[in-house]
Length: 554
Image (cartoon, rainbow, N blue to C red; front, top):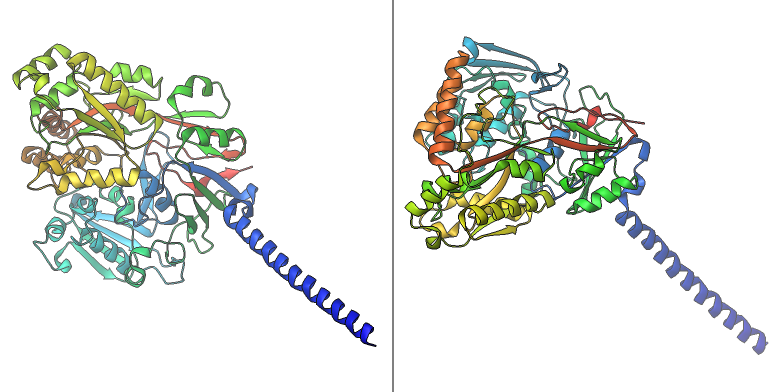
């Protein structure tokens, strides 16, 4: 009996041991599977319904009142919409069409605009979309507490600038009036026939103030954000991945079949190219210029015109760059045809601030390559030995580095100028650029000397380029401002006569490029893509808009 009891006890202990062991093993396997899913979220997305792309950097902000960069806009444009959207249906023309607005009408030659909103639109949390959400968005954009770099976009509205500057405290005095829950009337300071184009921009999209007040700075996280666009922000693993999913309550047409969009964040261009080559990415628009010759032979290669300008800005608040003679010398010591050769068709040399193909373009305006005259200007300010070592700063990208090194070499060869090059992570770079405008008593706080930037047009009008460099534009990082320039830009927007408007822009460009020289226009970009054969439809456009709902996958 005692033996039998002892054996049973040992068996019981053994069974308990294995039971506990199996329980821990099972828990470990479940945890392992869970970790695997977390590490590989893309495995859960069906390939036949997922458009796979990559960006080089984390979106700095998905707050559409504040975002200023193309990476953020890429996401925002697909999860949100404005009162109107772009219409690319007519070849060679960029028009606008109603989006959240059902109809758009104007009076008084375009000084008064009336927007009637759709009644079948709901936010992703089920709340009906109303005119109040539009007014809230515009109020927040203009509110000085928001400190939006794009507040000037709505300065065309009566008293908008005064509200943004704090001279007017009551927003009801701004020329925006709700005539009903579904109708808005806008009074401008002067006629602007292109005004609706401004509302295609992310900064002017409607908002939900209740969501922002509830969640604070985290209102753009996937679990908090509410949107109106064709996609929802389903996932955001910071610095790794974003996943967009089709918005099942979207009011508009969804002609494509890409129900999911995976946006991988990969800083190395070579890595994205490798992923495309092995079929892990469907679309690539960050193409290294060094590899263009080989890539052009591939059937996946596509080119499309662009109205995007590449330029160098100069921190005019920091000596010795506060001297326009030095700035002009820097401009005239750059042979832009060298840049064109380096980038092998990816960029076209340009002297004009308003690019070719846009009304107002004048190739005869701007400082041309003239190293002899540039050296004379340097002698007039004390010679090259009197200058400190300056720096060209840019955000990380192989082509940005090649551009900086080319111009560094040209300034060394043509001016005997010692210039260093430095790259900064995108968020830090933008922050440092914005600090230039915040400098008051101590110019040395503006660490940047010369900076690289590109400008993708926000609407198909010369005003999008010229307004950028006004003294009140928060996207003008140079610290330069000119009252005559500002007045010319403000006059040009309401002029109907083409020749008169051209003359106003000619005068303004001469002030900008030949007198002040706070910017150096370098080149006009060409859009270059690699597109997988399984992508059967993709909408190309000169405005560089990426519209995922149009994508058709095999």
